[in-house]
Length: 319
Image (cartoon, rainbow, N blue to C red):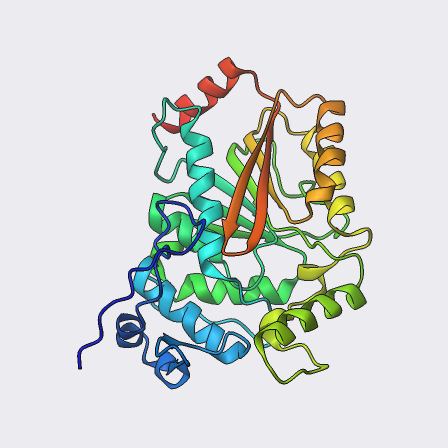
């Protein structure tokens, strides 16, 4: 019997998100046979994978990147964060809307639109999606040299990324933009998925909660797709301390970036973030709500440019 595609729309994803509907596993397996061994029918007779199995999640990611974003080869080392691609794609699409808001509603595309990905990790997901969908260029930074070495492999195996994505090691882990933004740089946006735990113990507990929510048999060991390296998951002071540093540093580069942006996982941090942004003189602050199923997050964006300066900046991307 021929399977009918599941056209049920997922709740909350951006209208342009390629992953708004349930996964078409038949197509995904055709483009990435590695996925086949992980696909099964659940109790509702719907095809799925075990999202608590890191190997299954990685195979799904690989299939999605090949099918939707033209990637030829992609992999990440054991222990690094394996990100949920639909949510990562949402961030890219909302950034496109943000840029369009200062470009008469038209999304600026092409290599002149340069983004700065703070904490690119080992997966390079944001540059892959942004380049594939909008032909944007990226600089990806990280404090983990092993992560960047894996990104180099991904870029080398996918020729269309070679001239579009460059990498920069942050040699001083306490800084975010220092050492990275050079005097001649002009970024249309910065983006970041900050570490939001304040300690390794807190990160471990969170990972265990996620694993146990997916499995009826409880475990005391977090699986690797909820793992990640320390710098990906936690920093001293947690999300608020990281974003405080980011905001203070952004003041030093007011004319070199149209929009500074970051994900903010913890809603209770928003009042302090807004207060700090007003304190440092941000000309405009925006909050963009995002949702994937039951998970609620948001992007906070700020600029130091006046409306006219924003228009002038965006004009340079169109010429």
